[in-house]
Amino acid sequence: AYSLGNARTGSKFHIKPGDRIVVSEMEHHANLIPWQELSARTGAELVWFKVSDNGRLDLSNMDELINERTKVVALTHQSNVLGTIVPLDQVTAKAHSVGALFVLDACQSVPHYKVDVKALNVDFIAFSGHKMLGPTGVGILWGRKNLLDEMPPFLTGGSMIETVTMESATYLGAPKRFEAGVPNMAQAIGLGAAVDYLNAIGLDEIHAHEVELTKAALDGLQSIKGLSVIGPKDLEMRGGVVSFAVEGVHPHDLGQALDQYGIAVRTGHHCAWPLMRRFKTVATTRASFYLYNDFDEIDALVDGVERARKYFESR
Image (cartoon, rainbow, N blue to C red; front, side):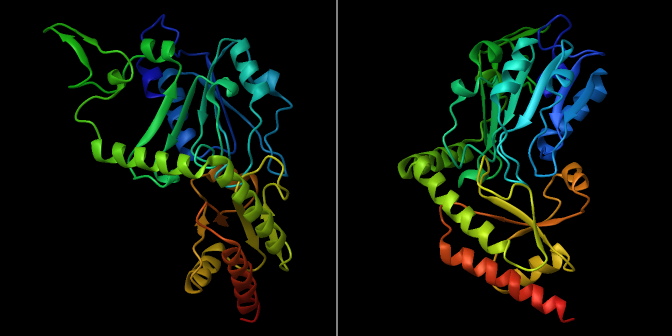
């Protein structure tokens, strides 16, 4: 988004008044606010796909949203709140048919199952290190080489320069042109180690394990009186994230009770306020699963939620 905001007039990356940027209601703020800012700075129109009651992306008006004025379509691959995996084939094809760039937020997918960038037919993919056992403050941007070579840098300084005069400068090719200053070396090495570790285990094995854990969690949680799952209630096109609400118990109270039982969950809006408003709530409790979780921990989660529910019901 920042590079597009710096693009020169006439460039394929130049965003101008009347252009359109398409996102969705289920985006993490990290894949929403940059596009809001780009829209505000350039005068481009920001529009979005809505989310259905069952937590799926509503693509029924895709031809209306993605039109000849569309320059960018930016979507999450998997919702960090709902666990929904977004079907991309139709959307990427439509975006490219009108000449738009497709940007994919893969923070919730790449660490959990195999992602084939060529098969997905996207232009850019971004994901973070700390979601995949790596350090904080580091991530990866994958892009088509021809696009990266043409895209203007969003930061300037040392290390990304080819030549410099007092009047102008030329930049190195990608990826160095986007890495101004001293590299984040320690974090990059840590991220590389995390990638090697996950590959050694195997993403297919990790995904299969998460599917079984998610099934057990959905079955157990939905048996609890007054508990409602926010998002898909089956395993079709969904990942290992389950958000839920318990009638009469505020998510923050539930989270604190579970913490006392030794169970770690996330409570709040999960950096997705628009999605919370879509489901007419201010917060949920979210449990998420990874390669280090086991079925005993799923049982502890279900038992802990039931124990907390009974406690607050009796107050």
